Length: 491
Image (cartoon, rainbow, N blue to C red; front, side):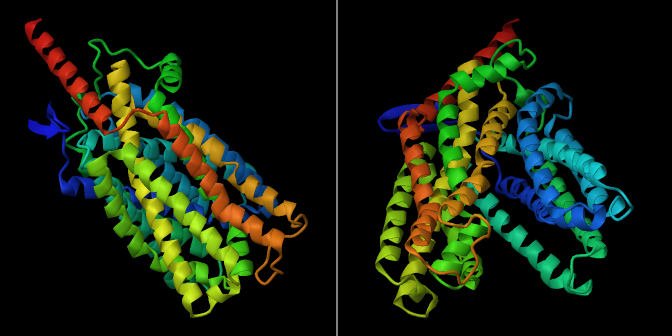
């Protein structure tokens, strides 16, 4: 039991804290997510080499499967609600999901590849993969609210996730492209794809074991009960109720989705080409900045988590979003006032640009720390509001809308580029830097993000789930749980 004096109010909240090793092992979930992400980045090559599918058709398949991926997220909530065993549910669901996605990945890249199968087989395997990925990934998203409800510890989970989300894909890229690819002649062929699949599936299995070890203490039936005496089966009405009456979730969806669509549009290859290939005139600089920004991003993640632990997750999102807007405005002014080609030269322009970019990326990371912990707060708020512990409904509802909205990112980027004349061709490094090209690049790289951050500030203004409100939520949950335990003793 922890007695604290906060803002003149004495509170008695028994916070649930995870051990450090449990947080680290849970964060190794990145071994599952990022290894499969790296492997599926080669899906277009597998489709072409192993199944003879034309490149243009591959694009339609991948787009359609993304929409299917979004639709399956909230469906997991019904499966999550119905899996109740004496061994819990998380380890069972994670294992089932992993087996399905791992088997599908091996069939896609090895067992069924280059065996004379065509588009139907590829699509069916991809659909099976998405089902397994959804079960595994969405179940993993429900773990943080179980691990800890301590407002100072929750953001720390995001720090360790950030560390592994950086390290795992970088390491796999080196292994696959620098070590493995040359051994197969330096080209993507069936032998390379089969070996890459075996490596990525093996790495993901290590992640599965780590997560199962991390949640063993918490994956027990008693931790999945709500505050109501007779928990009923989840229904569509419950899902609709969450979306229409959970106001903090509505605010979070508006905030996160607007930021996501801007981030994904700005990270499209054509936008990177506009910024580094045309404005700055050095495409290699993009890769260099991404590599050397890893350590500063991790340091800012730790800073953001510390800030969130002290001031609350909502305040973290608001404060650092304002800093993001300010730094973006400074960057826009800086780029408008100089010859942007000077950035590619070793000099003051390059140093200032790099510093501003690092600071902006760091501020974004601090927002991410508040975002990741805030979703766990929303899960607890829903439990206090409805009396039901339904984390899969909250995360699945958010993920559905987030993916549907952000799926328009590529279309936004290509449509904007078409407005400045790139209708039949795509931007290429070395193209002429005209004023329309400059300002469209600025809009896609920074302006769209500013719009998303403004939406965040507006939505958070109407969200009352701050640090004080979360303390009351935890107190309410604790009091009602104790009341239920006392009632059961007297029955």
